[in-house]
Image (cartoon, rainbow, N blue to C red; front, side, top):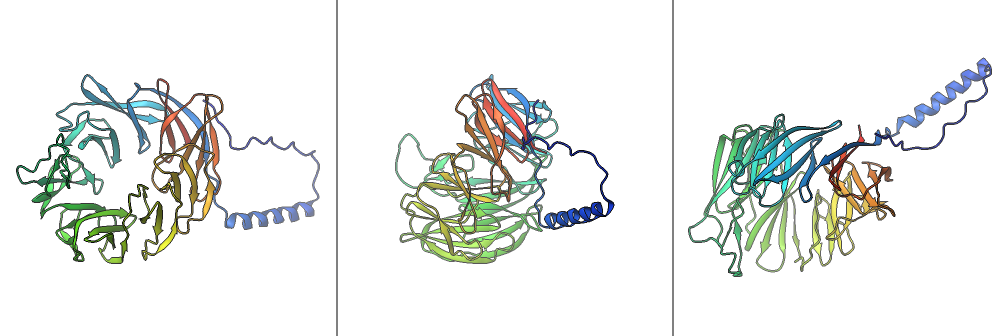
Length: 447
């Protein structure tokens, strides 16, 4: 196990020993103390960044993995069963191994990719649309759902189920044009649901704590704040319900707009409600997630086929560009150039080459001013929006170099290298794991 220090400058040789003059010594000490006080008064503490290899986790080619909640999770298929393993990463050892069957994952056993979400004492294992809730300590299956499970707190989650009119199932082999409406288990229909039921469930048992029914389609979103809850957009209204009881806390009518579709998008502490107007364009209204108070409203032009993506910021698509909006007022702040996607990482807005994972630059999310050039790196792995951004690039030889952009820093700190070519990295605030020949290589980079 090797430790790569950030500084390789040799230590200065000791000065020859001699007896200092007492007065000079005191004056020098006071001066040094004063300088330190002034320097430290506004200094940002140095981050404890290092590069330590934890080891290799054997994993078959094509199998998946993810870093989440300080652990490494690996997913593989063995004899028709999905095998999930949880690993500690320092030291590197397996905590548990869970083999889930079609009974544990109804409707989605080996369909689609796998992912996990660690919350409280639970691990939510997702495959396709299905979710299996595991005990985080042992990997034991607690309960399963054929539809997505969205945690509201460490103890309560929500699920939804739609009732469609018989005969509205879409024949995918027909290729017939027209609007499609998907059920929570991923099945397409040619008409919207007649009724949608939203249920608050106990995360440990899956038992229903509360339920509510709405006409037509709904859009639910988790609301964070003093009272955790869920915001539901349905039937021309926004409703804030308490997570633990489902009680209605607040309501807000949506503006009547002649259009065809409505949908929502959560950005920070805002719910952006988009309503497709009858003409050309979309009306966007921003609401506070905790109070449902309307913040601002604007009309967006048609995106004209703009495929750029914007994650973690309030954006508007204009031709080939993205226009970043002020979350407080909805007014345009700055815009990107063409062929650029936007993500968030290390407290920055990160411009990424459109349709790829190649980072271009980290910019000020308020003004768009370039702050850190990232063009020397080929890929990046980001955890939560405020966490560090781990970058990598292929060396001239067969190795891979790594760096990290820490929140508030204006330079990428070099971490270290691997002697082999690595791909598909996943990271959190302390660890990074990458696909390697024969498995997954794991490193720790922060205490």
